Image 1 (cartoon, rainbow, N blue to C red):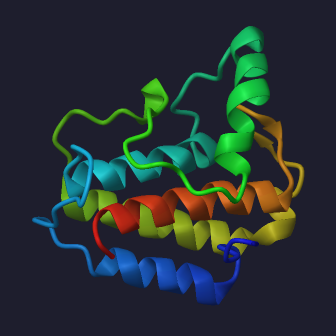
Image 2 (cartoon, rainbow, N blue to C red):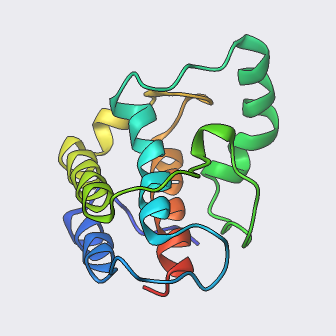
Length: 152
């Protein structure tokens, strides 16, 4: 089953509408992150695409990530609840809800405006070049997982 296409205006607008329903006091149905931490966590994916903020894995780590983690992240299979995450995605400090929400919405809009062709065969931070479908699955699945975590 194909995941909804985050590169389309309709799907990105649906995701943004779900984000807009979150409140600073929204509670997770599972997990330990606050809503602001969850938004900051979701921003990491986009920081790795649009900013030079996170160090790239070395050759050996990238080989391990491509071999064992890439399929989990880029497939259509949903994430399991309470799955472990990569160290760069661990958010333990307090975050500002509005700041993180606005950053995430901006990244989603930027991704949608750049479109599928921009991402086709674009190298990812950790997995090498990805197809448009792999990029879509990575973006959409992660957002959907965490928005579902917070009941929206």
